[in-house]
Image (cartoon, rainbow, N blue to C red):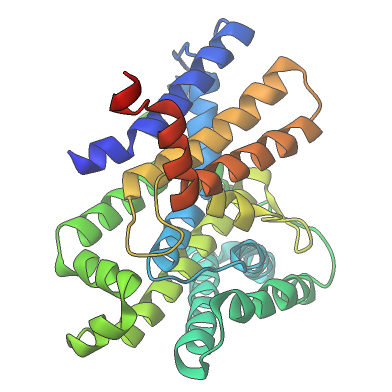
Length: 335
């Protein structure tokens, strides 16, 4: 019941955006079957939201333990650059081996990025925002070094399936995001891992005294965050059929933090929701789609996101919630 109560606000926000989208475009909710797969504006929203869902889930995991990773956008660029470079250098006759090498190489490098961030936080003792700021700055340079400062076009058709393909009529990117969501939901809510993460987020010292291996779990979660960003990089580069070390994943870390906050995860750690995080990502993508469809300039999207950030942080403030409660609920003596 408590989890459902947490989802009320994001569900209501998403419903309002869907209504607005329907008013601006009467076919917004219409889904058709053409060329062997589902089509429609709603399908496009779900498909384009897949990378943000993945990055947001990784971000949620580290925020739950009082951490943060602002380098995920750079990791997306690195992952795309590694995959594109490996494919471009592969032998044309390599076949499926080229695809496996590109995906495996990109995910391995992304995982190493997560390990690097985790070690700086866990072993060196840096503040998470400072530790990940290092890779956020250096990551763009690394991606551009990998691509030699060029935009690498990917002509390998099998690779395009990741971001543009369909399986049983459903976008492959959406299926990947759904699989990761379900796996994380089971791991965090059906095993002791979720309990350990909540304990670390609420009180790291008490968790350590209780025998929870907080450092090992934290390192694994930062690695998971890097892997999630790596998968998102594969989807994005596959969708646009290119890798741009300078622009790929630009400001994606901010959207991910916003999605996590909108979904109901506490930025102070200890409380998280997988379903809420997914809803937060869908809210952001739906907002972007509605603004573009309404003909408003793209800059308006940034202004609306700023308002959402302000509202999300305000609602997470105990003082702000108490003040709002006093304003909305009249004392019994005045009733």
